[in-house]
Length: 95
Image (tube, rainbow, N blue to C red; front, side, top):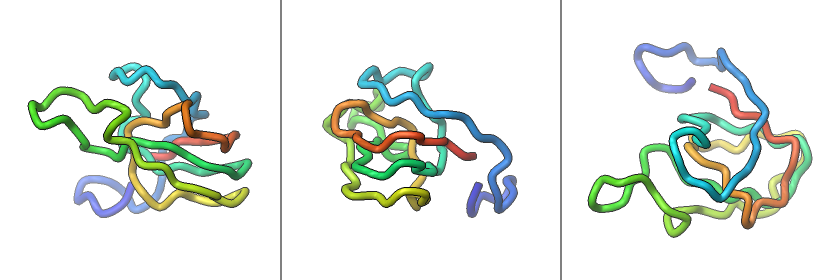
């Protein structure tokens, strides 16, 4: 999704997000845009963020978006949705 030369300008996949504080490849939403069904705060790690030594990110690299309204898109591309700090629900990852 977005401005990548080999991708369409619209979402082609969607999946329900289960927020977790475990940061592994298995819990990644893999460069997705988020749809927020029921509003609140959303704590995420942006796509492509790594630690200085190239290892996967930690919660230190997370960003908290506050007061996201019901039925809106979060206009960033993310890899992880963290449980701690996220109060929004009914989140869908779109890519």
